[in-house]
Length: 71
Image (cartoon, rainbow, N blue to C red; front, side):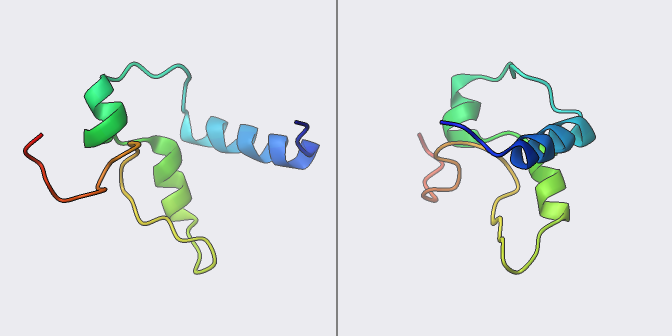
């Protein structure tokens, strides 16, 4: 799969602006359920427009899927 060069440049600029580094050292519980604060997500929320809604304050695959916190 090939991506447009402007898209790649935009992603690069966002990573540099948010000072996000890969790989991230997080626990499995954070990746899946608890979520974790991410500077890139904070930057996207800051630039949020009505056309592109980001409803979360943390990143996690199943973060805030249900309200059961007794797992």
